[in-house]
Length: 250
Image (cartoon, rainbow, N blue to C red; front, top):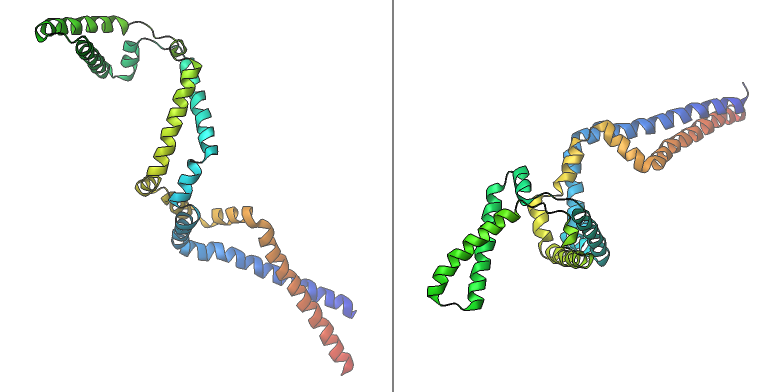
């Protein structure tokens, strides 16, 4: 047989062996190593991300950045606009729908009591007169509130102009930024948010892990497989030529 053809055949066999061996090695990593070590891998992923890549300071800085604040304010304004555009029923209907009628009554009584007390304080009425007017004011206030609670609210945009909604959104955003800067570390610690990473890794089976890894590093993994094939081809081709040379020189 032609020595070049024989060398090519042996090179092809070497290529198949080399590429196949590397591909099997890659699959073995996922189906043997990952299956036994995925809890350790999950712990390592969680540790690296929570302690180095996404520390509480970095998370807080990102969430409280000017860009995040602008995006949050826009989202709040949009949400408030949506709320104000709705046709709302009466307070009693809302309470009945949510099952909080008692809570609404208590809230109304609290507001009325505070209003009567503040009005009496501002008027500086004598105690004897207040003893008469306060109960009258409370009774009147409850009557007015009872009637008002049955009137449909309608659109809140009648009461909250766009300027007011924008002001409220800015205030809420400022409170959010302050809260994030102060409590991010505590929230991360209490919610154990990074456990999501650990749980996700542990739940992955070997085929899913291989699929995810190949989606991220498919070119590199194929490169390893092809490299094994090229090395196998070179070894097989060179070995065949070397044998042919030795035979003819001998």
